[in-house]
Length: 264
Ligand code: PTJ
Image: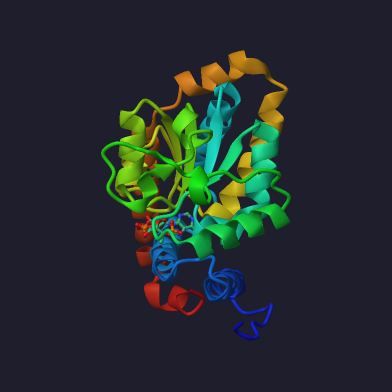
């Protein structure tokens, strides 16, 4: 365990707490070493996005909620970073949407599978798929360890949520007819572009918002969900996030980079 003392009034306290959580989860064998690098990449995009949930991210969250509520057999795919950051929200989301939870790792090892399963169970998960022999099926056209899936989970799903994905799997899942919800701070990533709905926001902020949105939308009926999905265009939504980055940079440049730099 690290024992970094982060003062509450530190201008970047929130971000430092999140880092600390990931480092400790790495030391506990939940997060892959590469997961720390992935987080750094995410942080850089979050910085450019203004470190808050944008209007366009809220639109994508609403579309994701509608997709969950119209799915027959949704599955939430969990990797090391997702488990470390939002295990409780994953369980809540599974409960409100009737989704299954499956562990799916790029850097798969028996020890990590079990550590993540244990963490999810501690957060309240009743069943965790994809662990050990349960991951007996294969997704065609994928050579990474991500191809190993549970026949009762991702293989049978019509909708898969893939937070913090690494690339080719989204494309492979779409190719075999699945709808995919991605959460990725990088609007340019292959996952972001290939997914059916991409939430360009930090998983730490967007996971609780998604739970809240599903709960609200649940009372409004399937007709409302279908209307939201008809009006949602993922590519246009991604473009809006790219424009937001450009606008934020223009604003920062106009305000004076040196003044602002001290708080970031
Ligand atoms: O746990 P494993 O073995 O499955 O490995 C997981 C990682 C994350 C290491 C693996 O999937 C990987 O290498 O991912 P990439 O290719 O680095 O992609 C991760 C994406 O997630 C990047 O586009 C980041 O911008 C994004 N990201 C990182 N942190 C966050 C994030 N998106 C949303 N919220 C975050 N907190």
